[in-house]
Length: 162
Length: 205
Image (cartoon, rainbow over all chains, first blue to last red; front, side, top):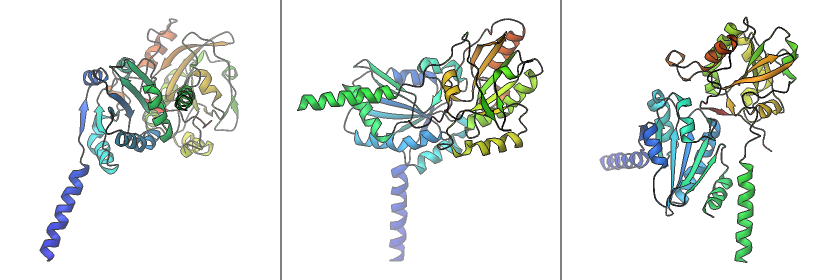
């Protein structure tokens, strides 16, 4: 019986752990530009954040909730960490695990920020959080240099689709 | 009924979208700036006009709490050491609302300025009017202003260098390059740059 219990606990732990494992790929500008040019009738929310950015951490649950709520719609939330690549193992991955993030998480490893911020969006000052909402089939794109509240996110999305 | 719902949604959307507009775009390079009068950590007020010997200033919107600002703190101190003697001292301004970032209270600013021995003013922009006038968006955000008579004109807006993590790895030192141009009597050849920073903690409307 004890053995059975032990096996069960091990099994549960394995399932529990694998259920929340999420890899974080490190990308560079060309991959980001390709992502922003993704064709199709899917509305993307590309959110730029960092583990050191308090307002970013505050809006993460809203973005996660939004992504889950619209799982059946053509909506995709992608979280792009602007943490230093050297912090991937020590800061980014532990936070992704701790918060059990389900959205795709990427880390943009481009330290020379002045060289690429304008290429991502000329309206962006570089302050985070920053979110780009786009749907390339509908030729729509909107940017938000601001943290979303829970209600704002849904309203903005609905307005985007009008 | 459907039509009304639609109109209401559209209207709400419009209002929400408008609320995302940032405070006015602020100064551009070449603009004359309005002087300010802000309280320093020593309790005295500071204005651009106060220091008659200054040929200009390296105005830095910064704060206690932002990790990027912290990473640049020693570089800001070094900029003052290098350029104050040449007529361009640093003026640091903290625009963050301390009700959002408690570590940016006036008391904490005093502590930071003392522990890091700031040799330049560290001013509190309590009503955030100066940050808005300049168009500062994040910390740290640099504005070099140069003096002509009693007027101050923006000569450079942007980042300190191009590597926030590692000063030694920065291949471009934007503020130093701009200062060298200015000291040589020329306009800054690179006068506008961008960097990832902490958004300023604006007061909730």
